[in-house]
Image (cartoon, rainbow, N blue to C red; front, side, top):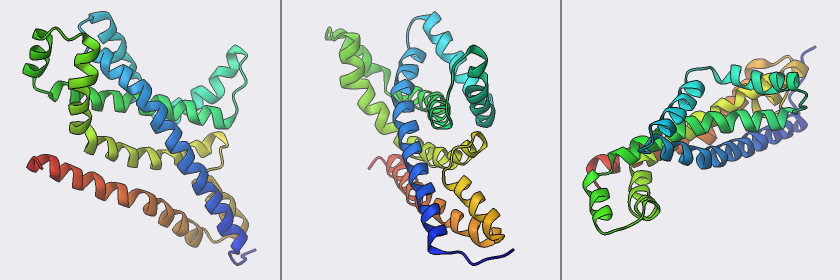
Length: 216
């Protein structure tokens, strides 16, 4: 039976929005840490480390995020581990983000003029100081538009975690739609909330890209 959307329904959507933001933040932060390691391994002179990181990136970029969430949520049970929906969603999105951020930042590292690295090496700077004091600050600046653009995709990607039972914004919308039988209005509100999150970031990414292209 069709019923009106109540303030309590709106509150449920806002709760879902809160979990979407929190999950995106955790995945982006965790993915950033692991992604930095992947980027360093990808640019390492060691062929073994470079190959391992390459295979990691290919695995997570070459398979659907939905499948990765399924494997983490259901697959680990086969080895006797009990993983709830929250942990599975966080791990799956973090691994997904790390592969993409690692490749984005790898491109940024390789875009830094090689002469700067050679000059730092000639000055006797260690690998750590060369990377963290000279190369990475420039690489992050170069990669910033793509990084922000990926964050937009990551926020939208959180909608897939509803498949493992995690109640974020999309799942909250499904629940309310089933209770009110007004899917057009409910998912219109859900879409508006996603737009409110993603549009400012998309504008920021475009602005940063223009600044980078003009050298400002």
